[in-house]
Length: 509
Ligand SMILES: Cc1cc2nc3c(=O)[nH]c(=O)nc-3n(C[C@H](O)[C@H](O)[C@H](O)COP(=O)(O)OP(=O)(O)OC[C@H]3O[C@@H](n4cnc5c(N)ncnc54)[C@H](O)[C@@H]3O)c2cc1C
Image (cartoon, rainbow, N blue to C red; front, top):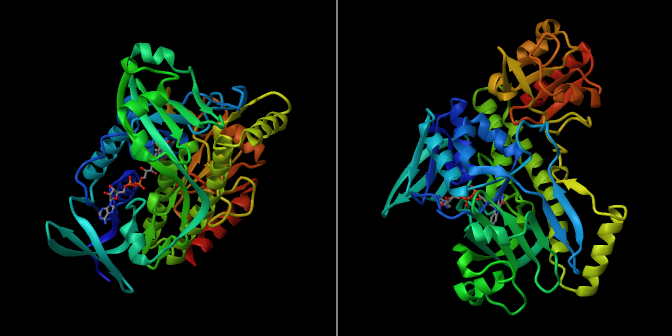
């Protein structure tokens, strides 16, 4: 059963690099390979959620990323006649997960920071400029054939994760097909570095111009970065719209060439695809290798980070003997359902935005305003992100939601809870719970979960986030998974004991 590595990761993009950091931090011997040597120097992903920033915080990258991240402005959607039809905003502080709920970021420095972190994590071996060409698995391990400059070598690993992007070699080798979720539209993406004059001419918030003549998205990025995503019309070819003159013509409603520098223009087909299987024996898919979605809610990379946060702790639990292999089946079940439900929401928004029939667009506008009760209200973007609905969870409303991250006071200083409580399996207790009696429960001791108390005898919290959360869920304790999703909650000591017992039983199958 011996293998060179515990886990081999194919692909060192954001999903693969984050997974390497998470696995290395858990003490697993981790190998990452990428056929390219450098980070793509232009931004693709633009926005990310607080859940993702929390994962980056957990791998100690928050400080390095701070100069490359900014709060997402509100996103206003305008209808066929230019009227406001929808407004996506953020929830007001205090922020439930400790970070601004929606952020814009610079992708190249973020990827560079992730790679550097992975490289310096003990136990992680990185090989760049080398390509996976085939893999074969037996009962105990997977053998990867890797090619560099015409030479081939083999390495072995107990498990392999294909984080190798949309045209994944791993997915092809496994013969896994995509389920087509039914969206396929051609768009042009244009990134501009605006100067002060250009910035002043742009809209003050991000916007969707849902105009049937040419649906267009406008996004405000970090610093001088502005992005336009422009739908291509029937008969328009990518070649004809990608040249400088054509791009400036498309932007002429807002800018002239004197207002900034064109950083990038690229046409894409916005797809909605999900892998029909996420696991084949010892091999898993994650990130764009497992799914693609239109960028309307900025979720592609976010979904990939959710994938690897979900898979990393399960791989560690199995490889370190705390769980049976069947735990790994919950990965695909949980993530596939989440991706499909979120993609359905993205698709619904995308279809509304992409409506080209003027009459249907007018009906859409009237319906959206009627649905909002006659006048447009602000909807927090985060309300559109679903909880987990299956897998390793008990059937409770709180289960499958993200446990909050409050600021707590430690030795007179306010710190984010994960920075002192870590991101392992944990019991978070509210003020009313008796931590000593919880710690004495045999099932709790055996689970190895850390006990963390917020309020009461534990760390005082600054904003009442956890106290409010427990009140809403009628509970005094939550069993929180390492990916921050709640396994279940309890309101009594007996309930805590039952939850610990059921978690252990579910992991050991
Ligand atoms: C226009 C646009 C806008 C977007 N906006 C957002 C947004 O706002 N928010 C968001 O979250 N996401 C967004 N996305 C999506 C996001 O960019 C992707 O989901 C994300 O970059 C995918 O990361 P990944 O690590 O899964 O794959 P990739 O970044 O594609 O990395 C895969 C890696 O695998 C390597 N590889 C491939 N095959 C092999 C092989 N055989 N051997 C070795 N290495 C291999 C590749 O070289 C590559 O480095 C957007 C995408 C686009 C195109």
